[in-house]
Image (cartoon, rainbow, N blue to C red):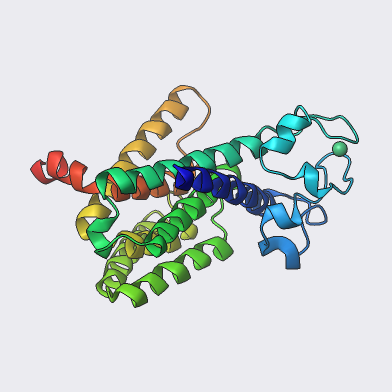
Length: 272
Ligand SMILES: [Zn+2]
């Protein structure tokens, strides 16, 4: 049981860090973001640093994930303005996700399919991939951009894993998906798909590796993306021309394919 508690606390800390990453990537005010050097340090070390409203320096004890928000009753200590609920939500979501992933590994051995034996490094790798994907999806959803810094970090870690496991053929899957999205990008002249999605496709291909899982991921991404697009057009929130960011659907498809790819492949897609 203790390992679930450790993962929950670790998830809170990582979630706090993800908040800072997302904030840094989506904030228009560069003065307001954490300094460049501290930007990659975890948020429970550097903190959110300042209140979004009154810009007063926050103490370390006002930056404890989840607990500080509860202790302050969701308001800034200095200006009494409401703190956005996004911070504790991202922290809680990440913590639950960490516990859930660990539970999945224990129960179903999903993550052993590729790597052979379960190890802390494998767990760490997938926690990293899920966390990064979550940050990427939120930034793309809010801003319509997929920052190079995040995608590149993901690609480096994904390739390091290939170096460790010797599965260099996954690079080919990445290149194939990259080529397919580059083709879509050129055909739609960048209107349907941004170049960020093309780079993201390489990342997804390298992470998933098996072409069956890539097909599952793409099937889910295009299907859910199309459904969301139709719903938004019907509701009058979007027109055919205004693009819906595709990154969150691609990343969602990737994560679902990772968790349930084998199952979905055998149940549905191989019978189409
Ligand atoms: Zn304040």
